[in-house]
Length: 510
Image (cartoon, rainbow, N blue to C red):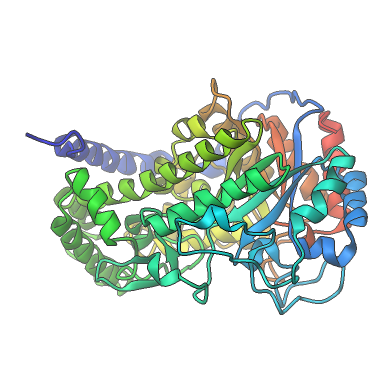
C-alpha cells in the first residue's frame, strides 16, 4: 500500500510536459519591450500603516538613541523599528560594507570589528534544548540593544520589532552539530539544517526569548536560502552559479523525514549525482545531441525525486516558520509575527513556485517582500548569468531574459543595461500587486522592502531621492499595506530618508 506522501509520478510528468510546451510557445510570442503597463489603480493608504526601517545597534550607539529617533521620525515618519537583534551577517547589523561610500550621518568609519550574534541578552532557560547557548554578540560589550531602545521608542509611539536572520559563522560554538550535509556526505561550512533539532530548537527558543523577555511589538525572521535542487543550477548572488556537488541538505534528519514521505533516498542520491554531472557539463559547454533544456527535462522525468527533495526542504522551512509563529503567539498573541522574504521570489520561477504566499499566510501576520529596485538590477543580471550557463544554455541571453520577463510579468531593460539602470518602479508596482493579490482574503499584510541605498558597485546605478519617491509611490499603487525601508539605516542618506517621508505624506500614510 502506498504512503499518502508517495509521489504521483504520472501527474508530475504531465506537468513537466506542459511546462516544456509553454516555454516553446512563450518564446515565440513574447516581446516585452513593446508591452505597455496596464492601468494603475488609485492609492488608498491610511495613517496606521507600518512605516518601518531596518537598523543595526551600531547606529544607536554611534549616533545616540534620541538623535536617531529624531531623524527617523522627522524625515521619514518612521513608526516601526526592525532592529537587527540576531545575526552573524554584517549586511543587516554592521554600519557599512568596506569599499562603499559612507553615509552622511554617524561616525565616519567602516567598523571593521564586526562579529555578530545576539545583540540583546540571551536568557539561558530558552536554550536548554539546543547546543547553541548564550550567543551574545561581543561587538558592544554588555549592551542590550532592546533594553536600550524600547523605552525611548515607546515614549514616541514607535513600535519595536526584532529582526533575526539565518546567517551564522563557522566559529560559533556547537555549530558542527547542526551543519547541513551534501549528498556526498560532507558537512557545509556555515549552512544549518532546519530538520536538525539543535537548530530548530534554537530558532524557536530565540523567538520565545524575545517575546517573553522584552516588551516588543513584533518579530521578523529571514532565511535567504533554497533547497539543493534549485541551488544546483541557479544563483541570485553568484553569476557562475553554485557547486552542484556541495548543495544541501541530505543529513540523517532529512533522510528520516524523506522516509516518512515514501521518498527513496538511494534514488535521491542517484538523481543528484546525475544532476551534478549535467550542470558541470553545461558549464563546460558540453552540449548533448538533444540540447541542454531537453536533457534537463529528461533528468526530471527520470528522477522526480529531485523535485520531491526540493519540496521537502521548503516544507521544512515552512514548518520552522509555523513553529516560531505558534510559540510567539502562545506567549503574547498581540505580537506580530512575519518574515523577510528574499529577492529570489522576484527572479526565479522555480523559487516563486515553492513560495506559496497563500499557504504562508496561515502563519504570518505580515510578509516583508523584498522588491529592491536598484540592487535588483544587478541581481537580475547575476541570476540570468547563472541560468544561461545551465537551464537556458540553449538560448541567447536576450531570448532567455525575454522568457523570464514573460513568465514573471515584468517589462524591464536588457541584460547589459540592468546593472546601470536598475529595475523600474513598474517592477515594484507589479511585484507588490502580485503579492497582495496572492494573500487576498487572509489576515496577512504585504509590506514591501524598499531599497534606500544598498551598496553596489560604484559605476552601477545609484539610489536617489527621486527614485525613492517613485518606488514608494509604486508600492502604494500596488496595494502596499506598509513599507520597510531597507536594507538598513546606516546605508542610506538623510536626503533619501526625507524623500521617503515626502512620498509617504503624498500617499496619505504619514
